[in-house]
Amino acid sequence: MAELSDIVAEARDLFNSIKDSARLEEAKAKFLGKTGSITEQLKGLGKLPIEAKKAAGEKINQAKSEIEVMLNARRDFIESEKMAARLATEALDVTLPGRLPQRGGLHPVTRTQKRVEEIFRSIGFDVADGPEIETDWYNFTALNSPENHPARSMQDTFYIDGKDSSGKQLVLRTHTSPMQVRYANIHAAKYKGHDPMPPIKVIAPGRTYRVDSDATHSPMFHQVEGLWIDENISFADLKGVYTDFLRKFFESDDLQVRFRPSFFPFTEPSAEIDMMFTEGPNKGRWLEISGSGQVHPTVVRNYGFDPERYVGFAFGSGLERLTMLRYGINDLRLFFDGDLRFLRQFS
Ligand code: PHE
Image (cartoon, rainbow, N blue to C red; front, side):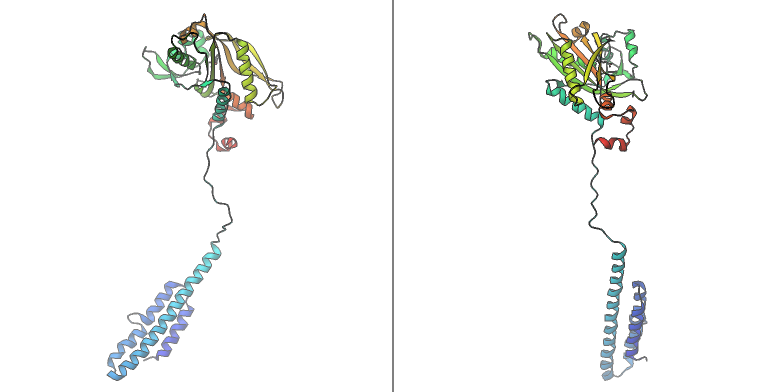
């Protein structure tokens, strides 16, 4: 039978040579397992006479606990080595900035719309919203574009599968002008019997649709409609308000505005509004910015107002165009490609 002290020494040497925990558990079995050398020693006790048994048993148990202590020490050593190695390789730099949650931003056209709303609100205009799927009446007929009128072909229309109550096919509104009639109808009903009628001052921004697509046209785009109706207003009032709006919008006090004769079925006379920057890259060039005009008497009647008494001025401007000029963007398709590299510049 091997000496207990030899067994303990063997265990010490073996444990100290081992560097991973799985092999250490195998080594443990060699001494303390079912057929381990310490276990064998304990089994041998049975053969000894009773007095010798006690003394030998104590010695074996002492050797056994020595081995257990060495085993635990080695386990701790291997674990701490492992931790030290991990700390060295998986370094964590707590001074690095944290990852912030991604923030959304407003689309540049939405920014323009909000800016336009703010400016017009500041001079007493209401802001109205209306449907993008329109009836033939509001989009065309009420605006003095009867069926088969050549003016209808000025606007390439998207038709919708679906009919209105008079059996006419529904359309995606080709402009925000139907909001003139919708808003004025509600106003006329609300103030029925008032004399004089309270004036209307409203803008109606929103999405519009036409069959058109290139660098300056998108099948979906945005317009803002403006309408001002009262008894004694003139083209000069429209020009004053619109010029003031443009100067505020572009933050340029000496921006120039001119009215150029044009045609729209719902206004007479009609004018294109052109503007000219007096500084910057577009300095000195006249740029078309809006359609406008005095509301046609037929349309004023369709509002529910007496055209002998009330005059209306309207304009319709493209929000993409205002945005492009403000930020110097040259391709309208950028607005709708959804490329974050482009969009992030505005948030
Ligand atoms: N609705 C016209 C367009 O889409 C613009 C316009 C609005 C013109 C109001 C005159 C008055 O082109």
